[in-house]
Amino acid sequence: MNISSSSNFFGKPIDPNMAVEFNHYILEGGFPRTITIDDEAAKRTYVTGVISEIFEKDIRRRVKIKDVASFETVRNFIINNFGATMSIKSLTEALNKNGINVTRPTVTRYVKTLADAKILYECSRFDMKFKKSLSGEKKYYLADLGFYFSQNTDNRINYGPVLENIVYLYARSFNYAVSAGRIGKLECDFIFRSPAGDYSYMQVAYTIMLSRETEEREYRPLESIRDNYTKYVATTDYALQKRNGIQHINLIDHMAACRIF
Image (cartoon, rainbow, N blue to C red):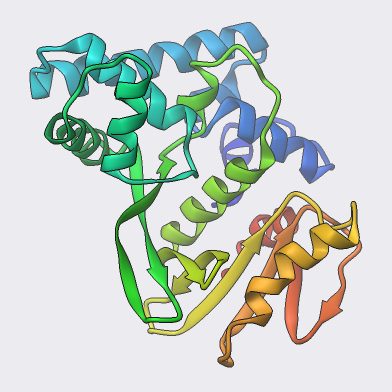
């Protein structure tokens, strides 16, 4: 995924500051026609209309969902909490706690419906200490960030899940298998497996320059992994450092150059 490729295709000017183009992509999503629309309000109307049509025609009518309100509540809850670790059990309990009377089989069906429609992608979690998948625990990422921003009037960006979502989609576009890792009490944002069977690990953060504590939080999980596969800390920082063989990369430049992990 080259974040300026759509602009090139439609003959639109590209801002020389890739960070500006990157933020456009975050807020506007990846639906190609948004590139051709200059007015911001018109962009939002277009994206909202496309997404509404996807939910109405491709999902509700095709699957014939009877309890539309219940489905939309589950859908909105997952979309608004993308990138968070959850299970069907915890999701059902959270909904019931908020007054939504829904059963686990129903939530399972709704989540499968969204995944089958390619609205959501399931990212399994893997216990790296005991070498096993964590049953039931997953992270859910969006096929396009427009699904989040079209339903929320607040355009403030929570860069943690947003950057994770972008990295997840980017790795999948190269046919990488992706999972989230746990090492004891520590979390590794991503474990990648290439089509050739090579592994790599990554921590994702907007910046590690704010404090020593932030830097330690991102490096510690990678430093606890005792193998020789490549390890990355991916940020939007331009001052890159070297530490214990871990590669610190600027995520925007890395993707603009179509480099893989």
